[in-house]
Length: 210
Length: 222
View 1 (cartoon, rainbow over the protein chains, first blue to last red):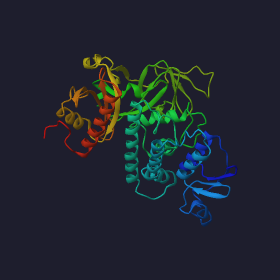
View 2 (tube, each protein chain N blue to C red):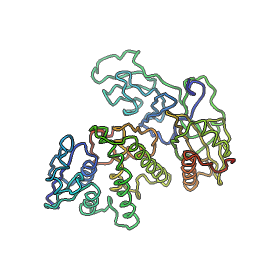
View 3 (tube, helix red, strand yellow):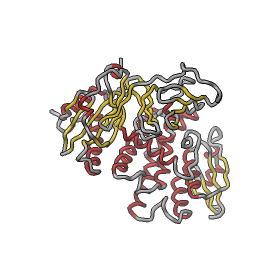
View 4 (cartoon, chains in turn purple, brown):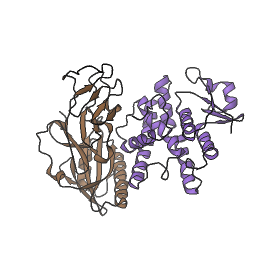
């Protein structure tokens, strides 16, 4: 996997998920900026040849495109992390990580869309999106509360995994669309731990740890 | 008038505000920041930097100062501005201050009031408790207190004991904004193994969901 090209967009949270894992793993890629807003380049015929659903980002591995953060996180964690910390091979942990990737894609879809509506003035039922985002954050808050009582600081197991990376950006960015962090003390502490990990990088809306 | 003017309110679990961190907090129209300095003291202030009105809860804690995320103005534990990075030589005027509330810790909770002459609730002075969870509930605080009382909660409407399913819970409430309430749940020390705290968390989460759905809660008289 020596030749990597990442098609990403600075303000896109899924692009950030991939950049962040690459930073933790020490993997570098050539970057191609995709003008999602206002350009809608991710909807263009040329980009759809790389990503049939228009999913962002796209990672080209030796010329083969891989689209969407979940597929890219799982692939990089399987191929570029000899310790397998980020995607454990032990079946129960592996399954748990994969199910939280599904949660990110489905339950946090409304959170992603609410943010895009707020930042780029897209049309949509933002009240419904915010309500769905709050429901998803509550599930995560309850889970992290139980984990903490059991002495576990991360979503799955005792170390950070790609499940954490698939989940936390939507919460970290929630203030972009008017959901403050007051009601989520366990998620706030989890976010703080993530920001202190060696190799952590920022994006607009997710500042460095001070 | 908010209840902060007339009584001590439990506003957060002590364990949720780690040293050198801050968090935003709404209490009946008040926007507050609760933060803990590096030596462990908890503070509850108005959540506004006097400079540009930025939320101090977005800022960061350095030693016994909290700094605003915008321009780095630093405030000491008395709320007095001590340092303005853009004017490092300036002797900062005494008038640049953040309004503070009185804050105390007892029973595993951080408490706040606007009237520090008020007597602190004696029931909270003597309890030792282990933290479980703070839950945001979409119901007015009086409705929540009423439902808890019917389930056997013995307290003063803000803080008390609830014996359920072999657990002795300590439950504190405060009204947030927009008709929401925050419920702080702990278990009395002595039964505080992880198992008791897990059961308490599951009980509290189910209670929240039932109250929001308008379903009678366990123990509540029909």
